[in-house]
Structures are given as structure tokens and as C-alpha cells.
Length: 192
Image (cartoon, rainbow, N blue to C red; front, top):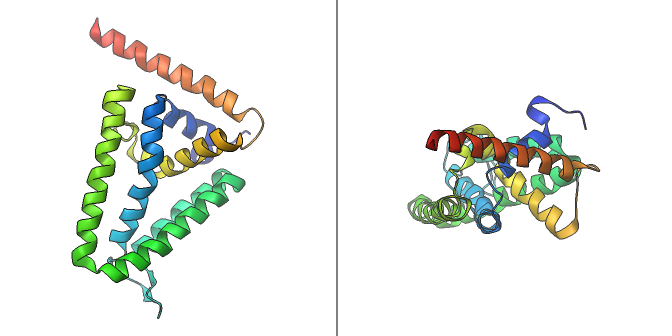
């Protein structure tokens, strides 16, 4: 579509796709990425607030995090980005309700257990099935910001055949294959 830089969805998607080509690893990410996002928002509920609403909602780091992610996803693709933004907002609302009920002393334990479980699953997905280090080792910001959207786009494409625009997936697949080939060539050179 001609976008470049920060809003180049093809490049972002190709970056992640090169690290997620194994079906089992993709399934693991599909199951664990959004819970990581959600539980992080649970923890962010306890950050300092600029304003507290009477119903327990707070303008704090969790809210800022949600707005940044939601806004970025809508800028990348209006349709899928709107779905992702809705999921971000729903995660924020539900995490706020959960954190306010559990309190800090129980919330951080739930978050820790969920994060450890989900991250362990992701490392197993990469180490055992993908046989490649996770994307965040090469680009932390892009990996953490894009992974929830990447998972959603994968699901939308698999279930509904969704493409942000015609030819998107064919173009991305070509870029993914080139990135994987480049990685394998580098890996082979290190071995020899």
C-alpha cells in the first residue's frame, strides 16, 4: 500500500512472520500473547493515577498503554486495527475490574503465575518447535508492540481470509521467505 517506516504493516508482519513459521509455535502464540497483554494491564492498574473515576477506572499507565496500542493498531489498518483496539480496550476494562477486586497482594501473584506460564510456553514454542530465538531478542519494541496485532491478523486471515488489502499476504509471504532464507544462510555460515 506504499506505507513506510513505523506504519509499514507489511514490514512489521514479515518481521514477525520470519520468527513464527511453525504451526505449533503460531498456536502457542495465539493462546498466550493476549493473556500476557491482559495480565500486564492488571499489574499496571496499581501504577500512579492522574485521575480516578468513581467506578474504579484510573487514568494511569494501564490506560496510556491501552491508548498507545489501540491507536497504533488503528493506524496500521483501520478494519483489523479497530478490532485490535476493541480487544485492547476490553482487556483494559476487564483487567481494571479484576485488579480492583483482587487487590495488589493477590493480583501480583496471579500476574506472576500467568506471565511465567505464558512466557514459558512461548520459549518452548520457539526453542522446540520454531528452533529460532524469539523476535524480541532482535527488536524488543517492535516485537512487544506488534505481537498482539500479529496474532490477531493471523487469526483473521486463517479464519476469515482477511487481507488489509489485496495482495498483502502474498507480498508478506515473499518477504518472510526471504528473511528466513537470510537467517538460515547466516546460521549456516556460523556453523562452517
